[in-house]
Image (tube, rainbow, N blue to C red; front, side, top):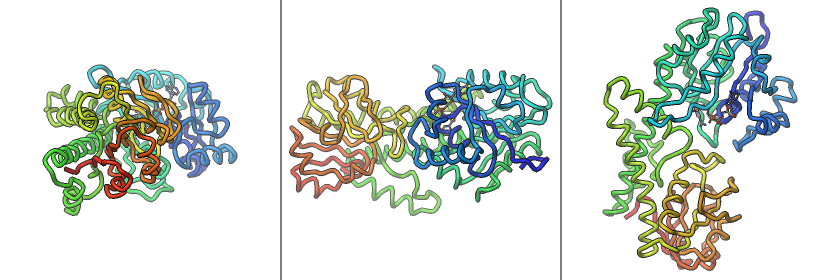
Length: 429
Ligand SMILES: NC(=O)c1ccc[n+]([C@@H]2O[C@H](COP(=O)([O-])OP(=O)(O)OC[C@H]3O[C@@H](n4cnc5c(N)ncnc54)[C@H](O)[C@@H]3O)[C@@H](O)[C@H]2O)c1
């Protein structure tokens, strides 16, 4: 509710994974929300009550918000914001050539807002932006009667709605106390700790969190590579580490390398910020380099599995998304690995339960079994539940070879052996 006891009017600019999830969940919390989206196809889908991408439970919230008249969508930014209490900016902030975040879209949205916002409105940066951007936005806005608040988003693809409704924390960075409380009040219906701090600290909490997780995964995968090459079981090693309460057990699972729309981009962006501040970016660069090595290592594992050169060898790739539960392919490790296989001359066929395209140079299959047909090697690259239930006998029958590479720890060695398959397991010597 705003000061006049009316529901808060929230405008969300950019209805992608972050913006649409926020729009639908805030409408569900009782706010009146208008989503602004400039992609005509996405807008048409939204108006039909359908998210333009896959995210569990989101369609239902988008549809119910519209039926309950708490949620609507438009392409008209100016008309949407004239009576807005709060405007959430959730447009892309991609990487520039040097890794720094490209703020062009944020700047163009903010400049357009400056002409139409009512006095007293609050502009909220939900996009992931470098430290200091909120202050820059104050300049782009040029409005002393409008406050700017940093409110970074921590959603996890594949469980965006759940993460929004049950967040570990809500972070609000504001130089004006009243504006900070207005933004914190948007989340009043959630049971989560709220950190109200200054804008720079809020911006850094986001980057530092993602980059720390990326560093952790690079370390985890280094332990995995060590065990794969020298012996030992990384899963047990990491579980043993995780029982130490100072370490904790989350994010200790080895894999083929990390990716997704945030970790690589945010790690590169924080490294650029650190370089500009003339601080030491060594750790971040090392984590990025280690991840690239890990991805190349997976291609080497396939090369060994075929006993030499990949040239002309048929490889089935199961799973293209960077994790299960999403259709997001941005910076997916599977794509990098498929690219490496294709570059080495392999004939790659891919299958993903959520994605009907294939990586460049690869062929698309409609099922895991179809992908495995005549393959020398099957590589499981995403932890989709259906890959834990592969019919191993049928798989063995369909394949020309007998090698399975499981980069997600889904398959059981004895079951594979029983089907006549040789299993390479992530993190095991
Ligand atoms: N995806 C995630 O898991 C995640 C998590 C936390 C933070 N973030 C950050 O949130 C921001 C958005 O990420 P995303 O994944 O939602 O991106 P996205 O590409 O899924 O969505 C962005 C949306 O903005 C729209 N858009 C672009 N320019 C616009 C404009 N001028 N007016 C209206 N709409 C416009 C696009 O059409 C698109 O629908 C980024 O800064 C990202 O780093 C993303």
